[in-house]
Image (cartoon, rainbow, N blue to C red; front, side):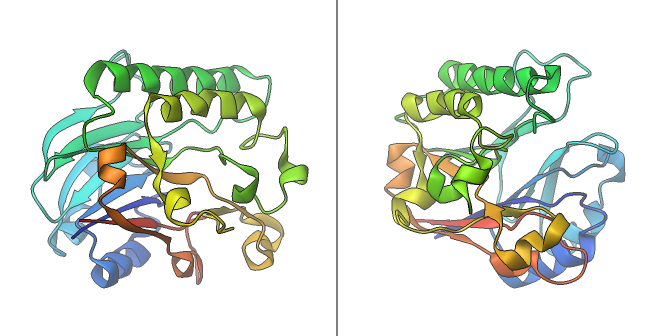
Length: 256
């Protein structure tokens, strides 16, 4: 059984004690992290290596950044989208683990509707879809996971009518996300839990977490052959509790 997790840690150095404790308890074979918010040379490798993890990182100062922490050998590391410029934002890292291609993404937030950043978000989704078409097949065992910064459906939002048309739940974002499913990916959590109303992100403000005002924006998308091997996908809501948490909860998949 392989255990693969995704977690927007919202600054790996700020959350390091929590991350260390969580890894010691949960022991995933691979953790895909987003928003590491640190340059590669300053990533706290020693702490995670002491727990038996090998690190592959792709970060930048203050913003963005993705990383892989693996207890088993990984290969074929690729950083960034194929058409990224040398100074592009660090938002994607991929690797192969036991024959499974794993693509870890931090999709742009979009900042505000009608802005260049929102257009960039939609374009980034299109470039991600082009990368999949160019480098993989829906017949391959592939996992695309991370923080997608969009809730796919009404059941992924605590109050759909309140959020409809807003950032993270806008028709243009849904239209940008849809080609990933049309290419052949399956939302593994939703396939296993069709009626669940569970969330992965809660705003820090207004007591959103304690009020249950969340969205499910951290996803595990799998090709059909891999989804058929997936026995569970769960959201670790407990990891969002306590002092100085990330605003996201980890999502864990268990694969035969």
